[in-house]
Length: 272
Length: 265
Image 1: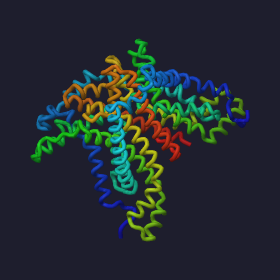
Image 2: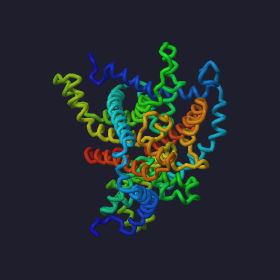
Image 3: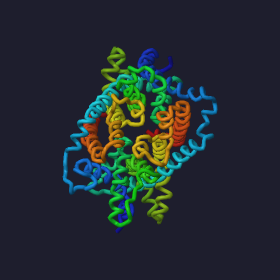
Image 4: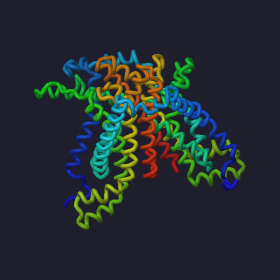
């Protein structure tokens, strides 16, 4: 056997794993295998529909662009707020941190609704801008609304991650840099950025992947700016175009999985 | 003298701004769910009418969401905990492969997993129209969280020697597993269960595709009310989520911390 004295026997391990393996094979592996095979029935080029149809390509590129922009904004804001919260000792710090991470347990639909409350036709911003004599401004259903909504559900994770990472940062390194006369910017560039690089990579990957696959938020906002999950949903439910919905799902799944996989390989930490 | 650990005023202002952005919509929604007429504002007076209406139309979704989340935790305990043990102790290449596959449903968007489930089992109408269909989706999505959390606890070296000691004293595998191993990783099991519960209660991406008119969960009902109802109803329903679900999550979190403190290694 060569497993050392305490290793349980093979049959025991197999028996322990069998229920989960059977469940997973029946309810994920088999369904996904069917999903992978489905576009082939309509011809092999169905797999590449996202590249050959201008509409789907546009939807994909819009989703990629939006997710990248949201990821960048989330990382910058999350890092700055996280570092601030980690080193600031004010009374309400713990309360503020728990309030800021509260939305982690909100379903995406609630976040979409929040944007309607802020920037919808009856929204707060519309009331404010009208009071200022600028007419009723709405942004909830367009690109701005989606961007802010995605930012809303991404920020809590980044803030929590950066607060934890910045809290455990080596203070001596920074003291040393400062005592050698380094400016704030030098400290930020040469001390903070390298120390937070692994956190940034792992957090960025999960934020990007979540944004790519976010369905509930976009669904609630029924946005004019079409993202890929909405395209997939429409193809499936409105046009009963199952092969195409499958092909687009495969594209979306491949992109998010690859981003998470690469970040895990590079940073060595798990993103979730 | 300037304190080096003090954040500059600019960062403090930015933090305040971000906090406002995160908290204002929550406050706005709470107020909107309690006023008589949202377009008139607080002047129209406060009321519990909308809450009552939501409870009448959607009260059932709250119970079903909680039952589903509990069943999801239970299923994860039965399938996930033994599997986590097997994966932690096995060195075979198959175990590593399975571990890798198991995390895919987290990486792949929920919409795709839901479509796959519908393609495979949509024709089984008894299954398709029951809550079991949603439960299966939630379990596939949450299983990796449980297996990962508990698996890393099983990998500790002290636990191997503990297990060895129990074995040398003649304990059977069942006795060792339930009497020694599971109590030793209890904090991880509690943490995993909490994570699974939270994920299941809020899950929408899969659930929206898997639900039927008779099998609705809280997030599904929310989306439905947002799409078709007044802003007061949507806000009151959001308020129900905040009042019912969040205190429950906090309570569970407190229990988890308590167990960690009194049971932790």
